[in-house]
Length: 221
Image (tube, rainbow, N blue to C red):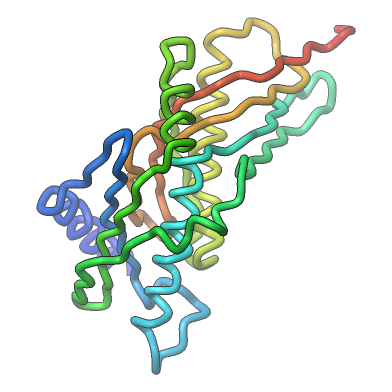
């Protein structure tokens, strides 16, 4: 099984080189894939149909973070205060009304895989968001996260949110001396995500603009 996953990872990396992704302030173009046998809920009689449904869910999930952005709340763990780490990330706005503007082109069926080109153009408001987040005041942050392959699509979401959490945690560790009580803010994915499989996990790398809303300090030590 482990050998098979390594082969799949190699093929996915090779695919990313053969089919480069495009990104601009107006147009978003993604090349997404799904492995039908990676999803435990997929029925054997319609594997590619189920895989496409996961690609649709994945594209809507990523495009929300690339157009409207996500808001987050983060509490660092603090053993001295008996505080556990807490992280929550949710969309700033729903993508429901924008689904109709997504184009799914160039379906390609490979061995146990399905690939799609995803095309989407930002509207005026989305372009405003991008220009706002891409100001020099907002740092560019990278994060890498993992999620269980056995969880299906929820494992992929978990990997993406862990990438955000890990990126945020490492960024604030460098600029804040004492652990804060809570950090809130927003982010906007600035580049096409890297998604691959490694040792039974989805691994997602995200590159995003980070905007801090508020940092709450502890009143007592």
